[in-house]
Image (cartoon, rainbow, N blue to C red; front, side, top):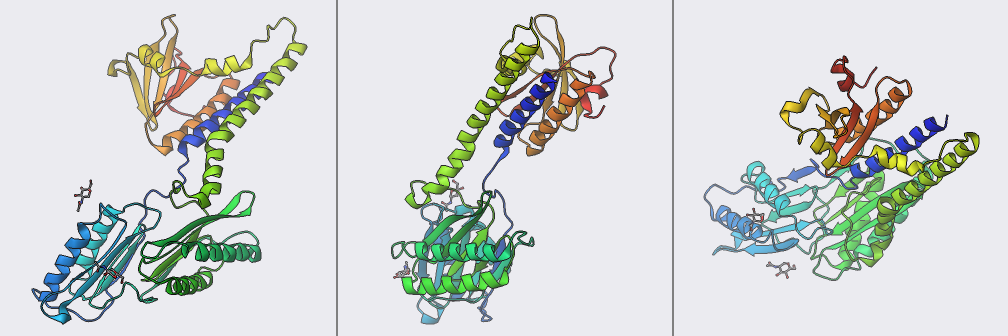
Length: 413
Ligand SMILES: *[C@@H]1O[C@H](CO)[C@@H](O)[C@H](O)[C@H]1NC(C)=O
Ligand SMILES: *[C@@H]1O[C@H](CO)[C@@H](O)[C@H](O)[C@H]1NC(C)=O
């Protein structure tokens, strides 16, 4: 009875520890890309407009590793051939060079002879035109991109929270100084375990008044077009607004207004595992005390030692398997390779080494640990321990002779 509880607690603890290895708070890759070859006006090949435009694009490109926004102008002898251009990263990024250079490539290939074009991607905006635009507020062309999932809670209170998020973003974005990117990111709480994250930004050369107006319009549009959805964004040439139910922006450094967000992240990623660990140790300790009372003669070894004894050092496993040598490999399964090995005391082991760096592996590992604790309960195969170290996730079994390899490879019994 007690050992079943122990096993459960150990697997809960392992679940938690493994879970934290896996959590990435930000979106890593995104295919978000919208462009518009806005002006129907075209220039002809080899014209001076084309010459100026190419010059403008290479001027923009020359700044991508230096700054997070830049506007420039290229004028020739003829006034008609002036080209204005701008790129702008999302304000929470110091640079977005790769984004800008791929965006420029996209415009070059998609809007070949257009005098005017704009592209929004996940991280940046690039635009050029034959008209001066940096300080004019513009709402066309525009897009509303929304999540397909509906918010499943109470919609009225969700909308209220969203409105107040938008109000805060509007105010904070405009606190930025003139001629810098006016932006704000913000987290707001819906309920204990539900939050909304927001982001708003204007192009750098808009006046505060115009920025406010642009954001206000974008927010009204967003709250209509993405009504009841878990996330959405509205993109205008002069401003961008976004909300989502997960943290999609990297945490800013040294920004006082975001201390709350940082604190909560530190709390969840550093403090909670410690608290969970203490709690589990406490429970294990209590169990062992009870155990002592019920079973005289048991020396009441500290259970935390038992937990420790399940964990193997990577070095030990490397030694036991001759550094995972091919000679020791006895098979390969979907999650990785299985090696035969031996400890210096003569105990033979089978080592299942899960594939590195795949989140799939961590999930499989969790499943595995759970299944094995069940298997162990039924005395089918004995798990000696595990090893989680330097991207390695390893399970160590007792090697049983006369058992087929499938025994170690499959999770089912
Ligand atoms: C920007 O930096 C990247 C990576 O360091 C480099 O490959 C690229 O050539 C640089 N681009 C410019 C225009 O400096
Ligand atoms: C960028 O835009 C600002 C504001 O409209 C303008 O004053 C400045 O001259 C522009 N910079 C360049 C290099 O064109």
